[in-house]
Structure formats: structure tokens, C-alpha cells
Length: 112
Image 1 (cartoon, rainbow, N blue to C red):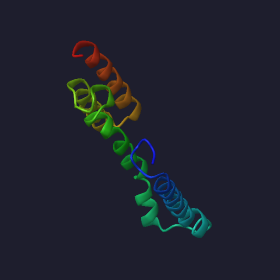
Image 2: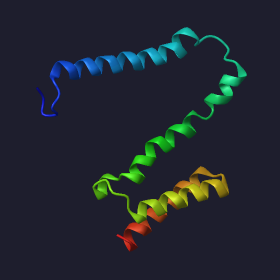
Image 3: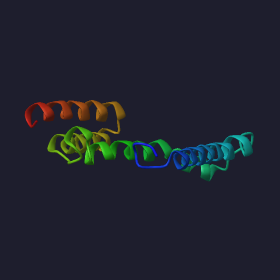
């Protein structure tokens, strides 16, 4: 039994299964179809992978931030809103990141 309340054997089984699953997903694209031309419809959908992953990584940091004990705060919500607005209006990633970071910095300074 580990400190996390899970049996050590179960933990290693889960780690091994997740590793095999991750390897399997990569092998499908690299090993099986890596040397073939992908259809246009699939390439069109793959362009949006990064756009879909980034919000999935950032959203928990906005909604359940570790710094506040998991409760949302005004500074982070304001910064997220400013980032989205800047991204939509300017269509410029660097402008959105810069405005979001500045809004977070100022929001934490003034709001707390």
C-alpha cells in the first residue's frame, strides 16, 4: 500500500496500461500510416489539434487555480476573458498572450 491509498501493484498496472495505450495511439499514426498520404479531410481536421489542446490545458488553471486553493478568482477570470477577447479581435496569438499576462499581473496586483 502506498501513501496515496492505492496498492503498488495496481499503480504499476495502471502506469503500464497507460503507457501501452499511449504507444498504441502513436503507433497507429506513425507505424501503420506514417508513409502514406493522408486524405485532405483528415489533414483539415488535424490542423485544429493544437487549438483544441491548449484550452484543455489552461482551463483548469483558470477555473480551479492551485494558488487559490481551487476556487476561482476575479484576476484569473478577467485575464482569461481578456486573452480570449484579444485573440478573437486581433487574430494574433502573441497579442492575446501578452494582454492576458499583463491583465493577470495587474489583476493580481490590484485585486489580490
